[in-house]
Length: 346
Image 1 (cartoon, rainbow, N blue to C red):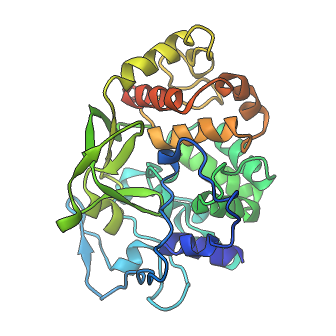
Image 2 (cartoon, rainbow, N blue to C red):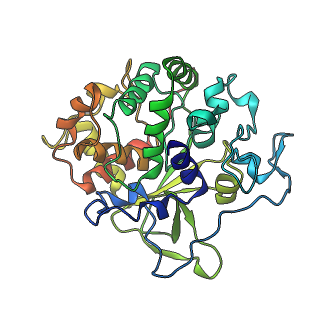
């Protein structure tokens, strides 16, 4: 069962597997834009078939590596769920990966960490970016997932549920190895924040917003949401290029409003983030940095804690911080934190 859950997520079929949830369980938690759950298919509609490997060798600039479509995704072939190590386009960009990061373990239903989070730990807006997070924090979060203390407030966030199953199957040695690996790298710029009144029309591919193309392309009002998209959708979605960054479109004025909440606490609405996350919000000790990180990811964590989906000692400390926040407050906070510079290079 764990095997099939992980495979479903990565083949983009997880949405069809959750139709059995009740209407109450399917109710989107706020802020809905942060979770990116695709709408249900129209009645009678045929779900799109998973993309297939045609044998063509794919390439990227700056590397002599070449991979097929299936190799990029860590799939052995088109017709079975068998896994292989996913593509590592730029092996000189990161330390030597532990086996659990590079290959996972198919016998236990663990998909390679490097597939979703990239070999460099940059990750994408629909998952997490473990690069540069404190080792102890990463260990604690994997333990919390293993011990049923950390899930998603949005039951349809299938990749979070898959990550829980991976954590439960990992050994303590694998947890430590992955934490040591990702924490050994420094977080570097990855997201550009742009205030705007309109955004590209998008579709959600497993929680990743992809701008529409062709006749369906265009723009629409941004409203009260953040739309985080790849700078180059083909590089991100087809090639899984770990050097291809993201752009976060946020409402006009959101950064300034978020700065007020983050730096002053908003007159008692919350607590100044620097108290725990450090003067530049780059983290202190085992407290993670939140500057220059994905606004979609950070918003999900704020909401998950507020909704009671995340527990454990650090999450419990955050409960009073998020208790009074509205969805608009969360949007403004993460727009500001994402706009901040990444830590200075060591």
